[in-house]
Image (cartoon, rainbow, N blue to C red; front, side, top):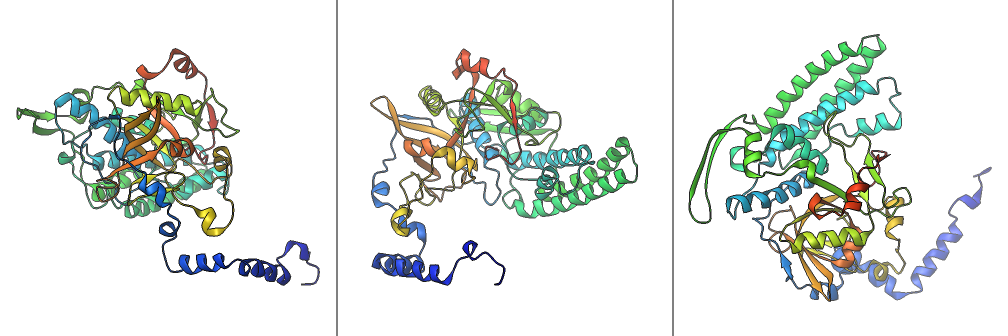
Length: 445
């Protein structure tokens, strides 16, 4: 150890001190015995929170059966389609309806592949270990996304009912898709960079890209099946009246059965981090599924503004899309989200507190999950708990529905997507700013 600065290392003396401190409190041994043999969350569960969950709300929106994203990280797609189907249900007066996630997932993977290869062409002069290039190569065809990506897909490819293109095995098990497609895309990136180094033109690189995309298209059809260009569909409404469509296109289906102008939807963010000041707009570079398409566009507002608008949407009998960090203080089996749910401070005899801004800035939290607000309980004019439609199937929570306390909303909710009719003129004018570009690895992506 000669020549080393011992102050930088853990000494045996320090370790002995740590052990004496542990042994000094018998509750430490009790915690160790419990945690080493059992599920930490069940041990740390705050029974008072569990007992205090009343699944009743002053304002609720009727929705269809809960969907199941299974093992695919496509919550954004499910949440968006779950919200959109509430519009269709009202329009055609049905209780059961679901869009085909398999259909849009096919095109999302296809477009993300093209987007990746275009980025490899654009970044061909950068070193392979450049942070941006390395970031894109790390996950060439990710499952994740946001509302603007759904809007891009719908605008180009429309929507279809689930029974027209039902789930395949790979829709809910995207790991196989991602492995094979990413392999092909990394091979494509290697080819593009080698051709560029050999002096080939951008036009020649795009010719090669077309050939690679032909392979990707074939691969995705093998995984998901052939997406229909036209289809026939029939249903009975709640009055048992029969309806039929013959040879309708996915674009026509969206126009007839959803009738939403996609440009009327806006993303409101509430992120208190230093790099995202309120009343400014933001986007994330390279966070998209299509080239030359609509981008993510946030207006960052104080939390109370976000919450006030979400309450207004629910009071008006409509559901509300929202995004959050769902990995913490969540009991998926019980369907509870509450920031006092697990008492880790008690179990480990230490303080874990961070402010919401600090959790973002030091990368403890990020936008990990999208769901739909379908209810709110108002007491003395203020929300105290929220009803959530999740996309984890009906075996979790209350047949797939979760309950979120308002204090959890404060700490772990970050964005909502709402129609412009709910936005003030000041907010709409705020969106006219040129958005500040955040890097694609930012936690709000």
